[in-house]
Image (cartoon, rainbow, N blue to C red):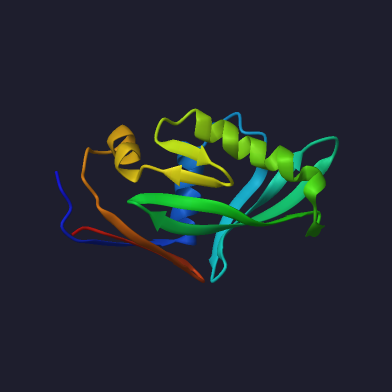
Length: 145
């Protein structure tokens, strides 16, 4: 199957529902939620370290050579920029990514082969991913020739 044109719109609720369905059940994060803004995708939750640590990350999203990319642009723990807890939270994302053969870590970015991910969870398709645009309340994915 080959996509010739696709314009997919996801709401914050759509992505939160997908995360609840596909994230590992033993994930050490409580109250995980996602929202969209001009800066990117905000992911917030509570990580139980020595005590519950509320965190928020902002991920810049893009497309590079047909792969979806995500780069951690901002990190706050307990409301303030915090590098103390950053490595613990990023490690969670890295551990999830390492379990998926369609996600790679390159430097400070995550690269997702969306075609391979689709073949694992849905159907084999040549997507020709072109762009991902994040705006308040929605995320737009464009693919095809």
